[in-house]
Length: 263
Image (tube, rainbow, N blue to C red; front, side, top):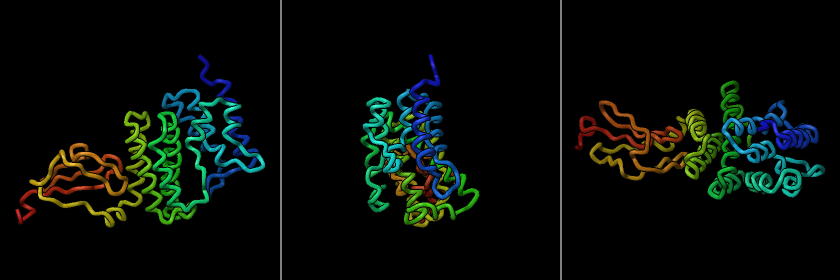
């Protein structure tokens, strides 16, 4: 079986033409060739055991969205060169209206997750992993200055949006082979804004006798929802802490009687 297939080779060449040769596209706010991004997405998909068409679509996933008018790439172009399935995947992860306000765009993107096939979800997962990991690396080097590159109203909203996308993907497809990578990314991204999130949405404190592991609880940051028994649980001498299994935000503190004098 051929691994480095002619179709994958052609996709790489096409992506290089679109992102590098036609426009010398760079990563946002950086002097780094944009082509690095879709090639890394393709590498992750290959490592995740994706099909050839999913890998090809991952390499091409930004060609429609980012191509210049004078060198416009359309869904028809992609279908003609790479087939209908690849074109469908690429179109499914393409933002169609960047003229909308940032928050509206992100709301549409979040709602769109529920409509995606497993192949499209895998491409979206790899895309989020590449972007999120790069953001973490850049933040470690340059601090909050990195957020000036983005159009988001605040770093908290940008991080919250990424966390909610991750939650939506895992909710839609729990067996996603990239689910654990996404959860680790969510935990790391949450750490950037942990103090702000905890101050805005503090954990709910309850007497331990009111704690019900079968009660539905939710994370106000990433929007995970599940039963108490599904949360990350940590017991101490004075309380039980329930944390979000996606982003690790503390949701509930169930205090034992020694701390709650009203019991």
